Image 1: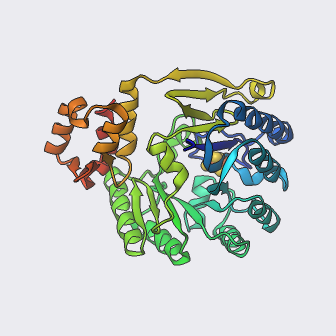
Image 2: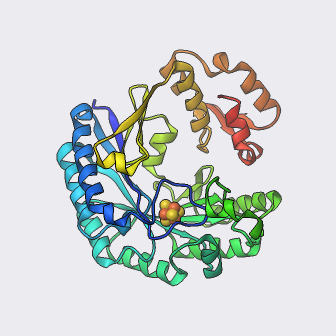
Length: 371
Ligand code: SF4
């Protein structure tokens, strides 16, 4: 049987930098898009020399704002992918789009080149909160994009949301959740805003009314309740889906599967080695690719198995751990497992372990125990 591979393609261009964003993206390099796409196409093609024996089970075009590219560019990239790799005919192929940058022509192009899943960044159903976040779009722009996407035939749509926006209260967050569930997307990602170093928010932190930790947790529990009642299963700490619509691409990351990343800053993982491309667009355009390659030790891989797997609501499987590492979880992590169970942070399922509600509230603390 052929091994499975997930592909990630990074498009680092945005119309404007959002105030919370520390992703590798630029709002002043649009003139480089043509050269970047040419270079990306070559990198994708070259990758097949080494990974041609894999079968591609998912592709994710993320950013940045992939939908900012002019019509035709995504289609060109997808043609190269299909020529170079053996893409499973049932593969999940996603693209991130931002309201205001994906018109009907682009959405039709995405459909026709095999993209079957959209991830739309909404973040909030309130225009004043979108302004606070520094988003380029209004709620009306989002409604346009969402309707056009459905008309174009997309039947697998994710909507991205952010809670704990400065000035937001639980009532406002609740109304965003109600608004989104009424649209019935197949998938919802709901992250709590984090203050990241080097962002606009970080530089202007004193000017905003930050949501306190208790309210943040209240919003998190509200999200699980409202989305749960609307038929969405929480299958990862911040991700909810209607049954059968869990994001297969992200599950590859959380389950320690092989993936190949293309474009600046993109990470790859295959055969026990992690790679990372240069962050510099200038260097990348000159031909630089992977600048870092880290072979993972067995203990690194076991730790990743635990803290990535625990992100999933289903948790980690004892059998899978033993099949992969020929040792039991309890043998490798006797103290961590004992302490986490004693403190009510994880629970013993029949198959392995998963986070409790209390563990989900302080998940980073739990994950750190396995590092
Ligand atoms: S659109 Fe996304 S990648 Fe671009 S600046 Fe905003 S959050 Fe960052």
